[in-house]
Image (cartoon, one colour):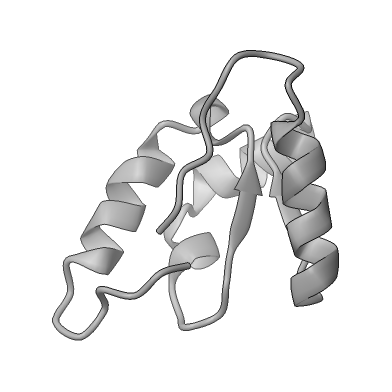
Length: 81
């Protein structure tokens, strides 16, 4: 897992979008109210599995970090996402 943290407006979301393009993945944008509601309803759905997951504005759904930690603590799950 990699957490990108920093002050506002320094390009974190832009960097994440570029990574998404390079990895051919979508960004789960928790800044969007509808997306945030879906993630909040079932955060485990968004972090389980072996695929790379890119989540922007995760701080809007703090329970995500607990679910990510639980996922990474499972035997054989200590992989980067």
